[in-house]
Image (cartoon, rainbow, N blue to C red; front, side, top):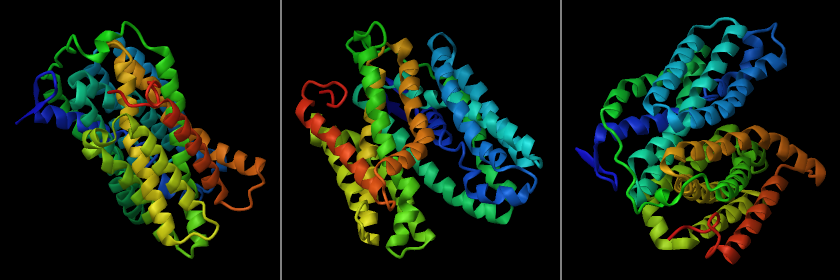
Length: 397
């Protein structure tokens, strides 16, 4: 079976290989999350800082290695880079499952961040290499969907595995073996050159102005949507919900981010250049519903779904814009720069949320939702006023 790329056709197995990369890039940090609270009892002589390093160091190293990977991809062999990054990811995952000292576990978890950082830009960069036009936009949507679907499934699995034995939580770090087995099929399939009429061939270098705009836009929507994952458990308690129910809401949020990826071209066809505007409106309304002083399970659920849907539409569109505002040989670097924003937002979001609550003397956890809803609304108004001419906020024809 073959897949139409807009440039020609490639075997389905090559596309599955690319999807497998999209699946595993969501895994770093996942294994440690459900057992972080238990680490102090597992390693009773460890300091709180040492325990926190298990989660923070991999995230910190992902960012520089994403940028390095984007740079190496300019002149290097992307398949070789994929093999090296995936192998580091897998071997460090094996090390995690066999570590019994905290020092070993910190070192192994750190290497997970190195390997993941090397392959994250390739999860979208390879799609840009093999696909063009509407086919590319569609596959970027599917890539985002695969990423978030894996996140939901793996998060659930890790929770159960950790209940059996804490080492089993790291089994999810062994999934890169699937990617390694599929890479030969990808290496046998060479990407066709970008058509002369393609958007990338109209670029001679990185469009710095557009890339910088995309970085700011992506940071804003990522930061504002992350409040759903950070504060929902607190707000759910106001509605009389227990932790399991708040976990369901967060899972629905990630599923909502996933859903548009499977029908992105259809969504763009319906809303046209206003697709970002309506996505921002959905996010703003969703966050507003979650900001109610007396929330209910219904308002929290609808709010989380609307926020996820809006974000899920815009994320792959941002990736496509990053790729089309760079010539073919610089597209992975452009994607690395923009995608780094996502991980930077994840790192700083807790500090920003706490800082904003402190500045405005917020007395409960619902204020952060209201503040973020207003931020998104302001961006939506700017989009409504400029979408016809703004190449960042508006969707290309």
